Picture 1 (cartoon, rainbow, N blue to C red):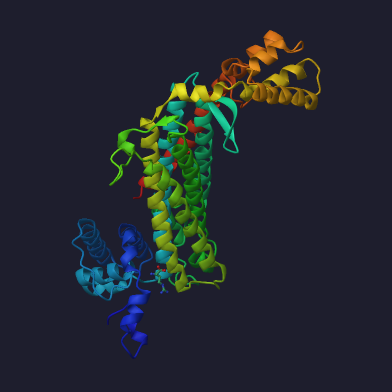
Picture 2 (picture 1 turned 135 degrees about the vertical axis):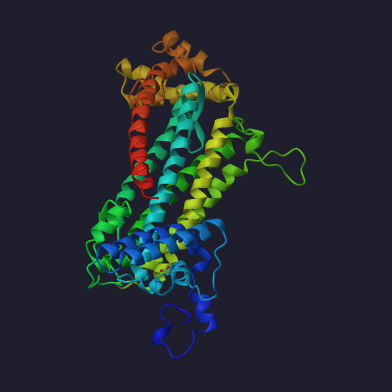
Length: 469
Ligand code: ARG
């Protein structure tokens, strides 16, 4: 018999059916986890009295052998191996003989594949989590080192106000820290074992889904067998988490492209993080940052594609669900690579402090600080705004320094003129979460605490998982 289901058919499956429906080319990725699931399933069968001690040992030995062959690349796939589950069962039966035919007792590929994929998603999200930690720690370390360095902060890509470089770096780091929080929360809903749900309705055999769930290191077990085999929310959530990390990498990437340009000149990328041109000998290009931007499209596409595949599906399992794997495998791999490329880039990037502070030195960037100065003297903000705007316009028209003009105004004068220096203006920016030195020092403390907490939760989740895998 060629396939697992040939018994029902009076004709061999057509070539095109096999080619069109096969998933073996990509679900090999699940091989080690599939074997793990089967090992636990076999022990569950023994526990239920459905396998003798000897039969159990024979099957477990065969599964070990299969795991070794898969890991060493010596496993030989047959043309009829439509997916990894078929391939493993076929080889186990070759190795173990007759008893191999008991492997699939009380199980369907529907609960099996969902189990494999949940284990995979847990493993990959944890990996991605540690990738986020590395990037966040890099941004944070560079923020701590950059001390009093000032740069121009932008809105609408127009210079807006001076900010500390550390404040800017932390702004990105907070976004990635939220991603980590979101990832941990998604993990809770990934961490549910579907094994024992069978094809859709459970089993009449005395299997114990709670026991296999615990053995596989899952935090909990399914409540409804139909839901268990058709639920791909965990894949959609993982793809969303990954897509949003991708969007954050993309936004950071866009700024790296801009700040590393000759036009801005804020960042100097290390040669190790730059590419050249095959024609123009002088070029040094920021391709990592550009691909961080470019690949976000594909990550969003992976999420969208899955949601569309799910939206009209009736309960319970439908083969459409096989389409869950490639986007997930792709997004997990791309995000892992992107995080580590970006972490390396930020470890090695040189900040051009002179250029950055020069961009922040233009007195008009302190316009709101001058308006605030008047506000403190009792001038309504809207009036103060108008007064300073007029001085800025006058300075632009006459070419006279804004600072000079401020000095000459009776209600502004020397004290206000001092605010035209970015360092002085920043000193005064004391509000919580603001861009001034004291506020940023406080923020760094809170950041460190939050990072420590989230990292501890990630490490705990990882320890729990590596107990099993
Ligand atoms: N390759 C299939 C998948 O990825 C495995 C489950 C097949 N189940 C079935 N009833 N045909 O979804």
